[in-house]
Length: 116
Image (cartoon, rainbow, N blue to C red):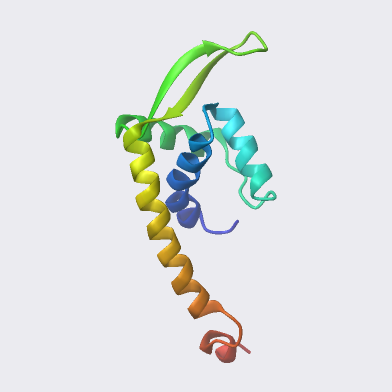
């Protein structure tokens, strides 16, 4: 996906959505984002972990170190009540943006007619 700004803007909402389904650790989040997006979003550790740390600082998620089923220490992230509220608000904002983009970028828009 081209724009780093767009990826950064959507990262928090994506992470909150994934954690709504249940706890997850960093690498698992990266794999799920890649799979669900069909490879369009290919996050790195360097991109993900600063976002997770800020979200934890903001009280949207919490973390806990535990031993995984593979007997490895992993930091598991879970959604907080505040994070669930934030997710509801973020979804509403993104739905508004999505509706506006559909109108602007839908079939036979003024933007299409100005190209070429």
